[in-house]
Length: 375
Image (tube, rainbow, N blue to C red; front, side, top):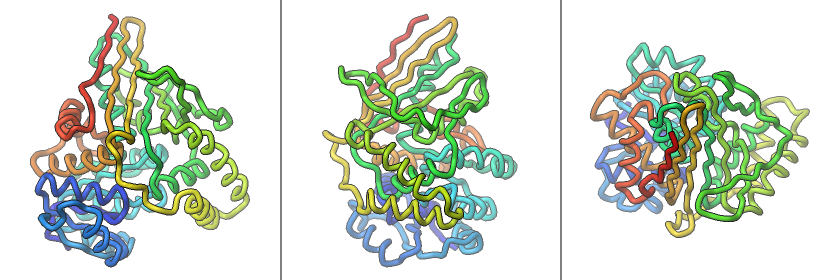
């Protein structure tokens, strides 16, 4: 049992450290939790600026429903950083439900969101708890832009592009390979899930603000089709994303295809282990802390319909810092008041897209939205 109101599970990882950093900014006591006491202590001491002024405790635990339930009891919010979430998330969600605490994570695994919707959403709602996966830059910042575009009447179709500068973390690389191998990616067409063509390869997209075309992928389908499937304003959603580094993007399909071919005949557990080993060969060390001038982000949303058209662009920087801040603010908000929605809900649905935009802007992570409206 913890005496701290917020638990950061997976606190020693790249994103977990940033969540702890921004919890400190909000002066929120937290428990930094993971499997290794040694790694947690080293991460807090060396990688969280100002940690000496934070109110926190370090707790090592095993990954089981029983152990996590005991630990979460007494907290109000769990920020889960332990992925791939479809593999390791069930125990955390079940423990949150048993302990009566809100759940946030940073997932980009569309199949995990669909699973949460089908298996846990109603139970969380019945207890008045929030189940909000995918509270992260790659999904929430783009959703903010989408929600702004939807303020224009007469639109029903969202064309979303998300780009960022930098390299995936160790955990993100694992998630990309595991998700590609073990699940399908969907977009939304007339409020139904439709599978992306797995053989389509890279897509060429025009990024606002530059002449050169960029390369993009469905990136697992992203969260957006799930969030908007039950929105009466929206019928169609497609989301593509990528990094600005073209050589890196060109290599992703080859790496994924090679990993899939090499593991296709293995049993599920062996296949998972092999995919994780392949991911470690691609990325086995923490990326450097983000550079504001280098790690830029662009979230662009074209919203169209029979009687309206709008385009919203959010330029920003430091996608992982955005993620850490969004998680910390989500926890901060939940400690102050009830969310706007319970059960399965996106960050924008739970906290308000204008509120989240204000938070990102107040910390210097995004510019004022550029909105073009034709109606």
